[in-house]
Length: 441
Image 1 (cartoon, one colour):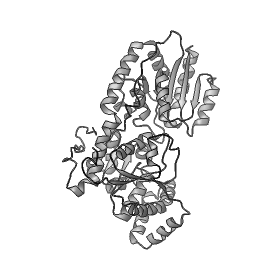
Image 2 (cartoon, rainbow, N blue to C red; image 1 turned 45 degrees about the vertical axis):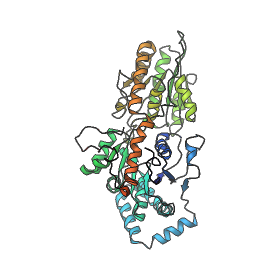
Image 3 (cartoon, one colour; image 1 turned 90 degrees about the vertical axis):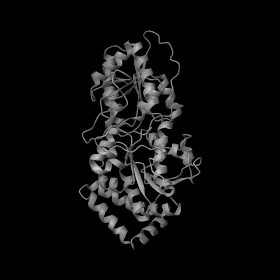
Image 4 (tube, rainbow, N blue to C red; image 1 turned 180 degrees about the vertical axis):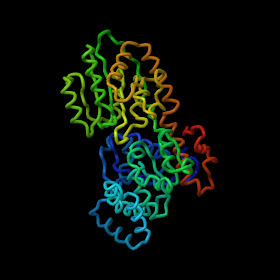
């Protein structure tokens, strides 16, 4: 739906991120790229600046519309001095402190963002924003909630993975106060509903991010010569929950079995040094390479050059985990066979033995066996590729899925002023607990 075509005034949204842009969060930016294409006017508020650049063409549309609150800014200090005269400011601060008092680190972070949220509230009024949305359920949603309370402008938030399963500080309160909540998997919706209570289910929408199928599409496969080197690809932030250490372990097994291969792990993150050390200790420096992050147009080439894409996700002791990694969606859309692990949310994307292979998490031996199995069976690979592309086209087409997200935002911004409801605009009612799954189209 294009709001211009429907003769409505384009809604003005403020979107709060911790950082923007971030190289490994293109899935989150993609949602707001689609909203911008639908004529939404979007201002980005960032708590900590950026981690990346605007070199990707799609991101460039937000240049000049990204705002950061600097602590030494005279305007920020002045807005906080004025806010001290308002009783609501102290009520909110007491609520934030009480809700995070038993978690010192979360309390410190919330106190750090509180003055920024006050400044954002001023920007929201100045920019004539109609709705505030947070890109994550953690600190961005806390900032959006504070700005909403100070301005009377409604807010909502998106939730993805760690912000549901690891950082639950004030999550119930944010769900209760939000006008609606968007998440990317049914398993997430259940988890959010358990936190928010029975009445929360009616405001939680499932919106799958998906991939741009015009960009990520298969190419004609080249004829493989017997004995040629296999190319294994992985991509993601180098963190424990991605499980890349188990992939390195699988590569050691493949090397010991005499297989010829190269493995590229694209990414950066806190486990970089550990992975490099593991690669060197296993004598894999000639076979396994860690490649810095790259723009998506170059990533497309990597998918096409790979014989298999491996995403060995695990659940950490702290509960950090993947939900539906967008790199899996992109690989499947690009015609690359995929191997991943049996995490609940990943099984919403991959059906083992039908459109990919799933193995137990944290099992290097099982990963190695799955890779060898695909090496030996060209017909299996071809069957998986065809089924995977069909699955992605049905459920993870970003342009198609964005229509449901756009309808949700229009309903909650322009809709109420025009006497509209979600159902008059064709948006299906979110299911109540116990009902069958309702996903965005």
